[in-house]
Image 1 (tube, rainbow, N blue to C red):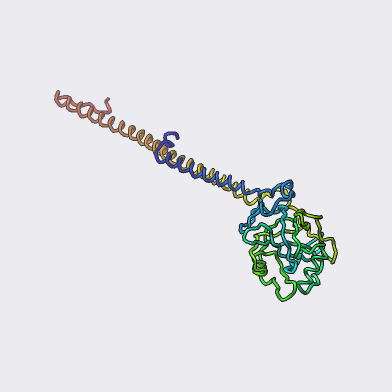
Image 2 (image 1 turned 90 degrees about the vertical axis):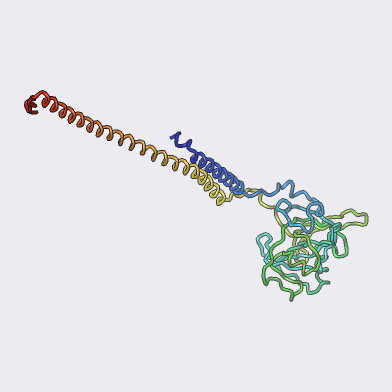
Length: 320
């Protein structure tokens, strides 16, 4: 079989099979790598507050490694711009999020960011911008529309818009998702591609230092928004593992096909060799018989000529 394997065509086929198998092995490795979802950043990182302007740039998409981070920023919150987001859970109870536009100090291009400042079991009873500002002041304890505050909360990716869910006919407007693509048109201001679920608001004093952190405590029916960090477990995607095993099988099949085709060629050569040997054996037998017959005939002819030359009668074959 080694002689067959060293034929040029089978050496070339082996090289091709090795190249194809190598590609399949790398594809299998990639599928195995994709089979385990990327673990979120550790809690020691996400639960340590960082400056929003240092953590995330406006005008850029929010990456997975940046999301879920506790961030802080200083600015003002325009409670009059509040939009109500429906179907939001808190401790198993369905209610509403109150989302307002916040101006971020030191943000380039006057970018703002949506801030979820409270949760309510019922739609807020505020029919004007003035009543919304009063509701925020009563619930939080500070007039953030005119007072600079330090906002602390969890940075979250924007949600996708829901067709037909935005209702502009009521005050405040209602929607089904915190979709920055819709809020940017409602507020007519450029926004970060993210929003913040605020946990506290600390008023900034005249000396520039932050005061006591304030939060919604149930006053006026507004509760603090609670968003837990992402679970830390890694999720195994079994479909990717199945694909990875398939690529390993394909790699083995490429090498098996080379061996099978080379083996078939070897068996064909071997059959031809056996046929040649059998033909040679039969040819030798027939040739030997032919030559023996020729020798007997030549001998009989010679004996007849001898007897005729000496005038003798050739003996019958039976006498012999």
